[in-house]
Image (cartoon, rainbow, N blue to C red; front, side):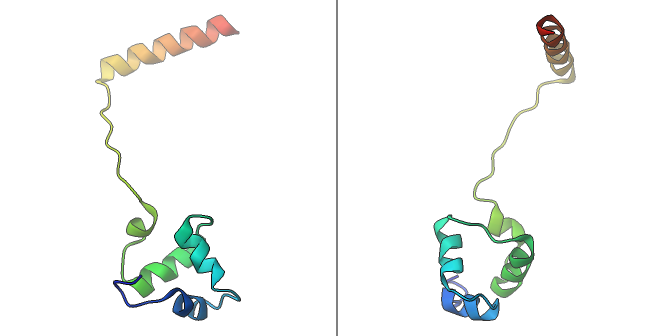
Length: 83
């Protein structure tokens, strides 16, 4: 927000919140904005919604198809045995 020159108080007024604490709670991670508010925030701050909601990217490596099939069979057998 600082980089865009927008203060929490300005966001409060722009978004018609009764208290600036709403914005501070977002910044502190106590609450999260609704989807509607995220859309407005992304437009006001001129950033993508992804940049507002994604805090880190995690890469995972998927197993080859044969390994996925084997895992699926093992899980089905375990579920059947438990029933």
